[in-house]
Image 1 (cartoon, one colour):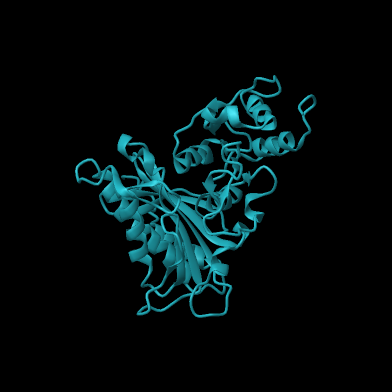
Image 2 (cartoon, rainbow, N blue to C red):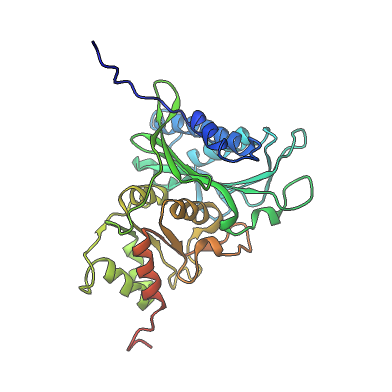
Length: 341
């Protein structure tokens, strides 16, 4: 007799439906938003895989709202997400790192109860050298009374997110998301075009192995930040040295640290006193994921998720990762440094 060793295959659609059953008053809108993002991710993944063959590598002659030269895949990813989401009746507005203002829902389409904020292609400056890039997204409920989304709906603290996630386009394409019920990862099977559950209930180790930080800015760091990095490297003799791994694509560095444990840090410095990364499109969604996986994220002063945004493209410092490592950062950055003016 042949023993049946087949295991149940769980698609992202099946998984989300099962999770929806755990919420008694669920309307299905949020589930559908996650399906639509997964669809956009498949389309972007297809372009990323063929980037070297299809004349979509390289830069355009335009800048985004951040003053950065736009990559061709940046523009494609941005347009793909907008077109996948604007007609569904589930959103009242969107905001993108690539766009200066709120992206309204076209007049001919219905508006829904949620807003979507996204970075269409994080790490896009690395596209030409085949480094993993990713899409990051954040979903919040509409809080204004009007029919259409307003700036107030966008500028909510990260703790009000109802879902957040990212899609990483690497050796395989993975979608990782949370809706406040744990963090779950799905790997795209290109042979059937489906995201399949591969990493259920991801938990970040309390103490991590990896340190991800751009050392080229060390000369511009405060002394307290330098002291923290010495601690992480084991140079002050108070903990085991962490392995330094820095890709330069936040979503790729965070993904590795989420699975293996560690810290991603982009401190404020004298050249960027307000930090560099975008609070709404990068820091908030990854902080929500990190928290749901057992980690922490803060900006050097307070939890990232408690920051009250004041502008759509606000920048922020960030320290994000394993709980004990971030507690170490909180302690050292709050300590007065003896002998330092």
